[in-house]
Amino acid sequence: MSLKPGPVRRSGRCIACLPQGYQPGPRSSSRTGSLSLPANWGTRSIAIPQELLPVEGRRLVQVFAAGEALEAIPLDQALVTAGGEPPVLYVPDTVELRWAAQD
Image 1 (cartoon, rainbow, N blue to C red):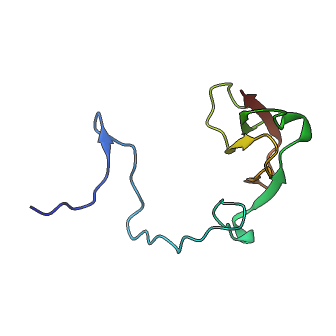
Image 2: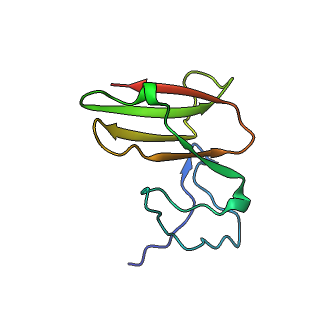
C-alpha cells in the first residue's frame, strides 16, 4: 500500500491545502535557529525587549499583530532561558506589535 500526500480535510473544509503547483523552497536555518527568510518576503528581525527576558528559569515570549484578538496566533514566539542568548524573532515589516509572555 502506498501513501500519497493529499489535503487534510475536516468537515469537508481544507485545513492544510497547498496551491496547485506549489514547490517548497530550500529550507535553511540561520545562526539564531529560525528559518532564514529572504528580505523580499517583507519581514524584519526584532530583538525581544529586555523587560520580557526571564531573570530565572524559562519564559515563552510571543509577538502578535497589535489590534488582533487576545487568542490570535502569534507572528513569532520563542522559549527564552535565563542567562542564555535571547533568540531573534521575525515579524512583517509594516505591522505594529503587541508582546506577551508566559512563565
